[in-house]
Image (tube, rainbow over all chains, first blue to last red; front, side, top):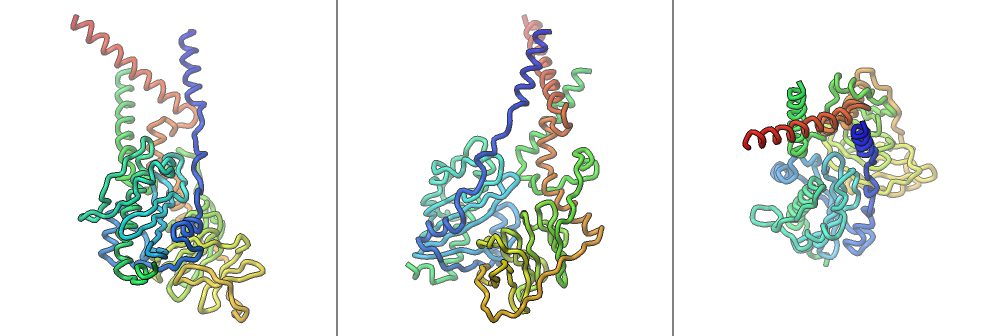
Length: 182
Length: 228
């Protein structure tokens, strides 16, 4: 009987634990991200229109339809900045990517809304993207180490970084002001 | 009997675990599980319509914290300012975002400019969309997806008028919203953990797990004893 009661107490203790959502939230506003990324409070913006080929390319990277016909970016001093929402597990994570000369200069998590995986906000993870570009296949040219318990968030971050680099490549070919705005 | 029950439980755990392990590949969180028996099991109702606006072609509604255009959920928000037809298509303004759609209903772009907290309604002066924020009005530039203060000479806009949706539309919108929160990822997760049965579910799952432990240990013990 004593063993049964001890087992029962253990079960109750296991189920009494709460979930930890304290780390989700907005870490950086879009405006603050853009100002820090481009060193100006009012950067110029333009859009990349997704024709069928680019839409298919984006769908390959994301694993789903991009769900938009144009992607906005901001630019100044030869850099472009992109802000995307991408679902990790169930809710969108807002991420920002700064690109210069075809490589990632900075990667930030602006808002995290899921209950798990928020560790991707920390510099030990995001600095892995610094200096990354596209390889011949149009994918990230280096691997990104995952984080235990944050696999889906890490995958979402990889997809966004890859997408931003692909869109940046198109933007630089269509908007000559980016390079001249140094 | 204990063995059969444990086998059924093991299969349930294994299959749901496999599906959850590949949740992103199967897009489980984007797939609605709002089937009648699951809705009944969870004991939830489709959320009512909190606000709705009708344009020439579309019905835009807010229900349960989500905005739906013609029954398709397009955004999560806590407020809907309105929806108006603009030159480029359809503009929907929520408490957090501007959403621009083509006349055919495809999303062109969504943007989150800093909307004033006092923004309360959306209208159109015939050329541009206008946001009314009490003492000041803003014109929406759908090219840059930004707001700029309206000129004093701005014509009095026609404000988006709340619409009444039919029961059929309300049911369709409610089910679409319900599908956002009651998705297959959540349902399989709850089945996997036993939480699909409120109250006793997790304890039943724990008891079944203990049965599996008992079968594994006793099987190991019997196997070792036979080999001696």
